[in-house]
Amino acid sequence: MERSKPLGLRELVKVDRTIHEPARAAIMAVLYGVESADFKFLLEMTHLTKGNLSVHARKLQSAEYLTIDKSFRNNYPYTEYRLTKKGRLAFRAYVNKLELLSRALND
Amino acid sequence: MFKTKQNQASELAHLTNRAIRSFWMDGLWDLAIAGVLLVIGLWGAYFVRITAFHSSTWPVFQELGENAAWLGLLILIVVLIPIIWLAWIIVKRLKRRLIAPYTGHAEHRFFMPMDRTVYLWYFILYAIGLGMLYGIFTWLKGGPYLMSVPFIISPAAIFWAIGGFYALRRYQLLAVIGLVLAISLELLLTTQADYMAGPRNFLDVLPAWGCPTLPCLVWAVMFALSGMIGLISVRRLGHGAK
Image: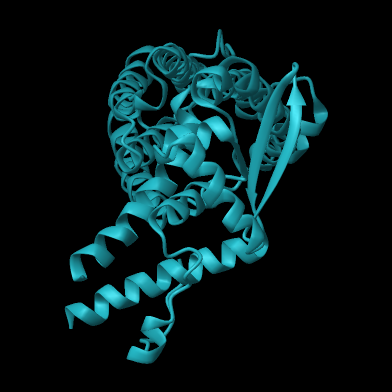
């Protein structure tokens, strides 16, 4: 991931509150590595409960960080999650900020 | 606070890497690559023979001379692109059918956001291996085996780099076994072809070119083996497979 110049303290505290929650950050991290993923894949990767996953995914959807496609496959409901371009950029910026923060605290 | 932030960044990177890792874990892509290597092996057996021995009845190769090898490589690349694309589509469908019921399904991008360390390791291993093997073959077989050596070292470097970074132990194990096998068999089984008599089979090679067929066959077996191991272990252990 690209690194920008060191941030001031004011900038550091302005982390993206939508992503800055462990469950939502985990969902974003998994989706960042793939094009799209279904409900079961996300569940297995993040170890969240079904309810938690649904709620946090909806919050990310309302922030337009991911899209949720619901359909039926072989008569079973199928939910597919996909990061939007905005979501990808926001996640990258968030991780960069975390790295800068840890570096700043190291100095 | 410091520890929390630092851990969070690395935890997120770990999760992203696990999602990427799931692509190789089930072994289906390895099986597809085994098939692609067989195609390259067939090309190698045929093409190196034609280019190495100008007694061929094909006038076009006589005129092209040694340039025919590079032209052949270009043709191979052009032919391989649709084959790899087709393999990609088939693997995606098979993943949905065979793997999704066990681990869920994720669509991976063709150019995955892999860590730079993987590329760095690959190029380091490839460059060192290339130099060393050209030296060894020149010393022991009287020629650098220009066409063989890249096919010996490249799959080993890929296996090792990906296996090391994404904790796929079977990749690293097969990288070592495949590398030793490919070098040993190439050294032991290939013979210098008699220009007047012409090549008897794909093991009869010119030391300058060598023949990529043997390493391709070795790596095809390794990839097929890796694919079978992956397929079985994912169906038994899910995302915990190695």
